[in-house]
Structure formats: structure tokens, C-alpha cells
Image (tube, rainbow, N blue to C red; front, side, top):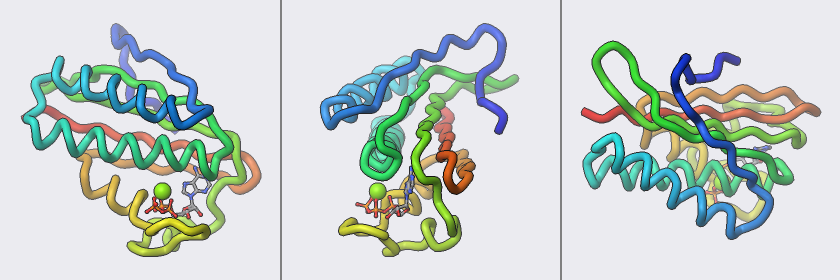
Length: 140
Ligand SMILES: Nc1ncnc2c1ncn2[C@@H]1O[C@H](COP(=O)(O)OP(=O)(O)OP(=O)(O)O)[C@@H](O)[C@H]1O
Ligand SMILES: [Mg+2]
């Protein structure tokens, strides 16, 4: 799985081991989104998506890491975040991405909602090895 980072990017890595880490990740994403001049609505969308994915990393992945930072291409800047765990992985990705499907007591809207809230969403998972989700929100 290709990371979103290019030479010169400076992503920071955060541990996701407890609920308080999810709060910290929200703050980190907010600061990056403001730095990139995302609109208030887009800031909220990126923060919400990151929050859902960090919660999944914690709940289902047994904890992991988030790498977060600013990315750029020829014409624009954005915020990228990569959520990684070494948990059980997801056996059926289509099912997991379906609105309302949950293996636990959730609403089943975290993954599907996160995908709708961001510009770029990539999920890579290997059963028995873990899950990596990469999201990007570009400033417009
Ligand atoms: N990192 C992960 N590792 C393993 N399984 C995962 C991971 N993330 C999601 N899943 C699986 O995908 C399902 C759907 O995830 P999703 O976030 O959409 O819903 P949820 O967490 O069950 O409920 P909600 O997020 O709405 O409270 C989960 O119930 C879980 O089975
Ligand atoms: Mg969830």
C-alpha cells in the first residue's frame, strides 16, 4: 500500500491505545486542517472521519497508530491521515463498507460515513494481519 507522503512531507505518528488518544487525534487533525485553510465544513468532515477511523483502530484493531500531516500535489494542499493496526483484519470489506453493517454494537456507519466525508479513501486489510485506512481531504 502506497503511503500518501512525498519527500519533504513531515507526517507525525500518534499512538492509538486509549480513548484519550482519539481526542488528541481530533485536535491534531483540526490544527492541520486549519493550517491548510480547509473550510470550516471541510475541517469538521475530516475530523469526523478521522475520529471514526481512530475509534475503529482502537475497538477492532486492538490499538495501533495514526500518521497525520500535510500533503500537496502540483496545485493543491490537503490533510492526510493513515490509520494502521495489526488486529484481525476485515474478512469481507464490501460488507464492512455497507451502511448499517456492524459486527458489534455500533451503528455500522463509521467506515461508510468516513468514505463519504473525505476526497480520498483507501482501505487495505489482510485477515489475520491488520488493517490500514488512508484518507485525504484537499483544500479547495
Ligand atoms: N480496524 C478494523 N479492524 C477490524 N475490523 C474492523 C476495523 N474497522 C472496522 N472493522 C469492522 O467493520 C465493521 C464496520 O465498521 P464501522 O466503523 O462502519 O461500524 P461500527 O464501528 O461497527 O459502528 P459505528 O462506527 O457506526 O459506531 C465493524 O463492525 C468491524 O467489524
Ligand atoms: Mg466504527
